[in-house]
Image 1 (cartoon, one colour):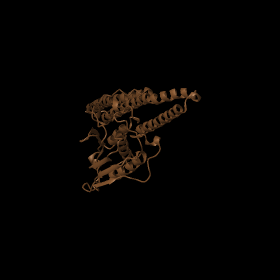
Image 2: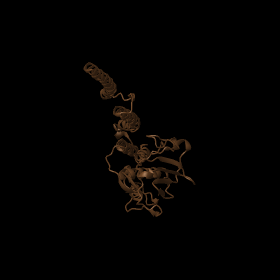
Image 3: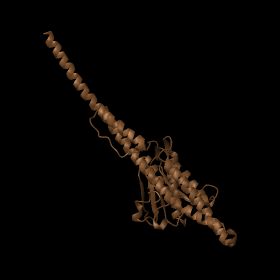
Image 4: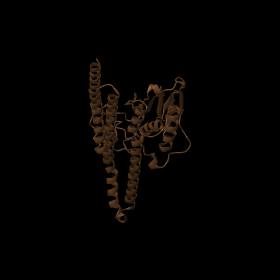
Length: 327
């Protein structure tokens, strides 16, 4: 009897050992694959490889999280490479112009006074464009990663501050029609987005016969002008980086202003839109996620005002808008 019990116990121990070994091998095999994939990413930034997911235990969930991380790394690297390529392409234009002007400046004494003045104006303009492009590139690169805490932001106040800044730069009046929408978001980013929309409108609606209008309703911000409008073929692409339609190529701007608007909207769970305005012109804007709207606002209490701060427009370089709209 004792031998049978001992034999049974030994069999149980052996069976448990085999099962434990198989289970440990199964777990460690998946962990080894995860470790190997992590080493490959660390060594040569190969981020296109996914790890097969097996099981629903902790290791399986770890593999799912790892694949999500790899996907985000791949998307981030692709966006980084695209930004560098686009920036290099856009920087060549002002740099080529400056190089040409520098060659002409070597014989500046031979130029007539009016030609000399025109040349210096051209150099100053290209320097302003180059400086503005660098500023926009930095803003775009940091717009998603800026460490700005979310806080209650009244969109009407954001629009007023942006309108005052645009008036100082361009002299254009801005009419605001806003409800009491309050958003849990990043105030600086939202103000930058509204400011870019206003500067973009001021650039295309150069006549200034009517004020630029800003309408804010339930978290949806719309900036409207009476410019040439937006072609249907361009409406879907105006928020792409550096995109400029034929009608916009002769105007100043980096082509990044609306791309920044899209990034701000996406970080607030919203979308962007561009459409033709009834009666002529364009309406361009963005939304925020309804989950970020705070109940403290007064959606029916609209305000209409003209942003006319004291002081006139600033220097020409500061007036250059950051839009670059594709129309």
